Length: 178
Image (cartoon, rainbow, N blue to C red; front, side, top):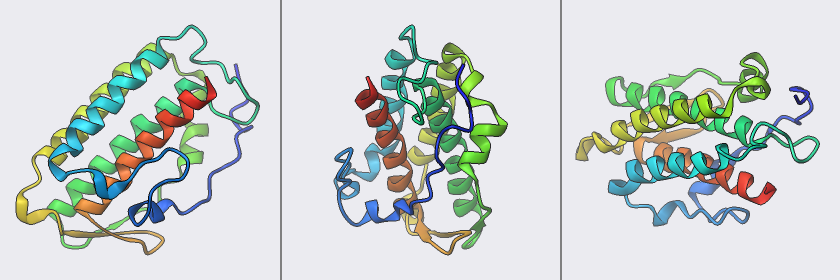
């Protein structure tokens, strides 16, 4: 398998995607209706399934770029992290989210060794859980706030759009690498 440390960590602050379209994947946060957020998360997880079913889903096609399975592991864990963050925003007043080092998680959890079929099942479950959370947000709770450890402020609405971009962008990454 691949060398898990061979992927350069992503240090970009992607919060700008809330203000303008992503020039790479084409995601436009403002175009997503609140009522469609849950369905969009579920559809993205379903779309990952075909890519994970490819015989080489665990193989890196390009040096320094995650395999399909590694991207899917990351998106699965993104769903888990954002579900916890949104739930805390709904339960607590202006929570501060602890730092989540996605690159350290990839190394510690050995994304490079995870089986694509198992990752697919886990991805669907994590997506369903966070999608259910978005589907259940009360109308008057979308403006509840939370703060990321680096100081970035979100509302439930903006964190949901930011989260969806992450999943959409990584599916785009997978498709681009094929």
